[in-house]
Length: 68
Ligand SMILES: [Cu+2]
Image 1 (cartoon, rainbow, N blue to C red):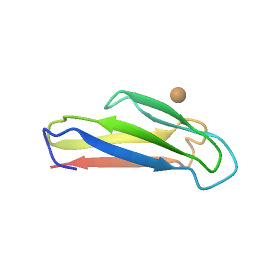
Image 2 (cartoon, rainbow, N blue to C red; image 1 turned 180 degrees about the vertical axis):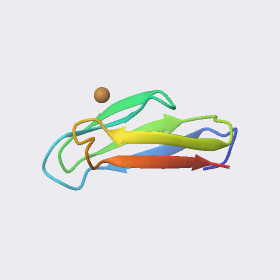
Image 3 (tube, rainbow, N blue to C red; image 1 turned 60 degrees about the vertical axis):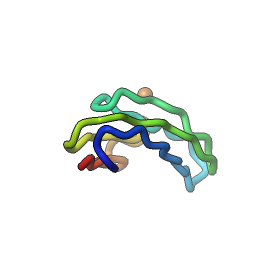
């Protein structure tokens, strides 16, 4: 995503169990219902790489947000 810009991210949960979209790097936490979606506003952020994860499935649900 672009640096120094506020961005709207839509998180889709494509299975029948709840998940929580979470990042300590950019300080967000939002429940995503089974087969549902949630809107998260992120930024403005400086250029860099920011980690996020699914709090209920941290063994596999890991991602990186690249800001440039
Ligand atoms: Cu959490």
